[in-house]
Length: 306
View 1 (cartoon, one colour):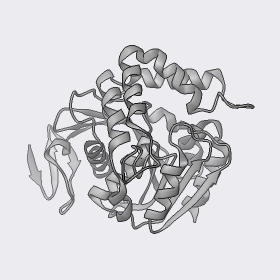
View 2: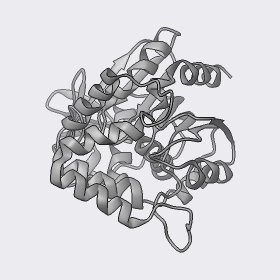
View 3: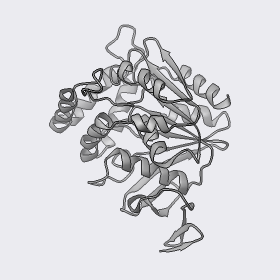
View 4: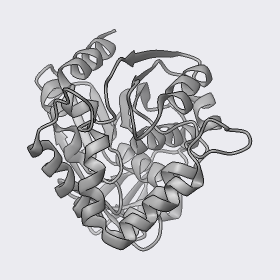
């Protein structure tokens, strides 16, 4: 491998590394192909890149993949935007390493993707765990390449109940999730799709097909990553990351979110992000990007155009 003018050149491929940008050895790019980037630790990150225009980068929730964003990507791609979504390490079609299933590494992988594709003035959209990834990415790498941010049903500032965060979810709940995944992850994911989309509510709009797709995406996640990511999304404190966000930020949350309760998430995040706008949807579930996609897509487009 040789370095030429801030670019890492490996195996005949060119990958991007701008001077002055924070990069760790584990996440520096070694190879880039049409739909994967291989990190120096050997982990391949799969991504899809649809459309042309200003870039919008999507970070998905646990235990899903980039496919969870296709309703938004097709819509925004049809309205003149370039839509990029990646499978987080350990999820979907990306590599399944034993190590690195933590929020710092997720954020560094995202930074590597952004630099490899040379994205500038991008809008970063994160759902659930992906919202934490976006916050940590900005906290670690700044907003040099970021124009705006969107947090949807996102886990920040901290899901876990602590003395300083009394409105959070008790550790026992997350321990039970880990136990459920370890005991029978297939059945656990089938059951999780019920509260995820609000299928247990009167008048629920979710189809069996949507729940089946949730199961299929969930089972693509590596077993180790599926377990480790529970700690990453529940115990990571994003308070300082949110304070570092200095770009316009849209925070969207359903007030009937049974996965990430709004009181300990969006309502607090909106107070920590200086340039934020909070929009609360009455009765919407955690999986509102799918079952309420028309509303979410409309609000995303309005925010991108603003």
